Amino acid sequence: MAFVQIIDCKTDRLDDLNRLMDSWAESTKGKRTASHAVVATDRSDTKHVVEIVEFPSYEEAMRNSHLPETDRIFREMVALCDAPPTFTDLDVVRDSQFNKTLANRVLDGLAAGDLDVIDECMAADYRDHDYGSEGDLQGVPAFRDRCAGYLDAFDFRFEIESQIAEGDEVATRWTWHATQKAAFRDVPNTGKSVTGRGTTTFRCKEGRIAEGWWQWDVMGLMRQLGVMPGA
Image (cartoon, rainbow, N blue to C red; front, top):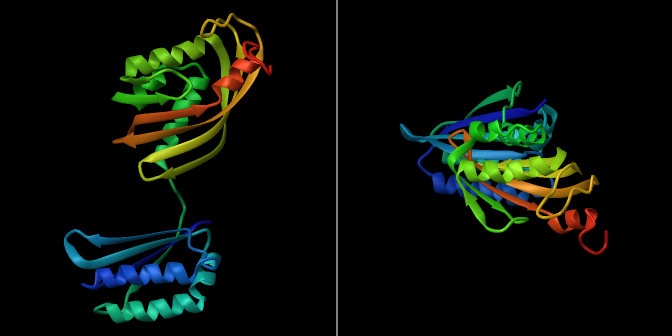
């Protein structure tokens, strides 16, 4: 079970505190067990500083606490604060990553032939960059037409290999399994089964997808369809 530790303190020496955190990150390189750390200030009280540190488990957090570098940094942190910091230890019982869910909703919906998922999940001014196609597209209708071209030509599914979310972006590495059922880009229906691999990065904004980048092996697809050498 993932574990989160929240550290509350009062200080007007935020720059010194940030330098201290940089020093800890450098000195514990290769040894620390923390996976993510956030330092934030209270908008209503800028002296109120909150640090949120994530760990894979409580046991890993304890290992991190016992590092001599962590003990030294903590003592220096106390010296920067108006009073001793307070700690809240939390076992994570739910971790909803909404942007990942949104990205998966689009990929799963398209694989199921559901074009309505585009209207549900994409912003009205959605901008699409498909490096296997010519030019960029803007707007839901244009992207819907592009996707309809693939759906008309192939029965396919996405198999998600890995996914990373950071900030407002989600990057998904996928494998595409498909069988051609109609002409595609002037290629007559071959009935062949093909496999493609690629990566899609979505930028999310206000609960919808605002921009997308598709990078995939279009040449490999054409070879498998028999219209390029090396098939």
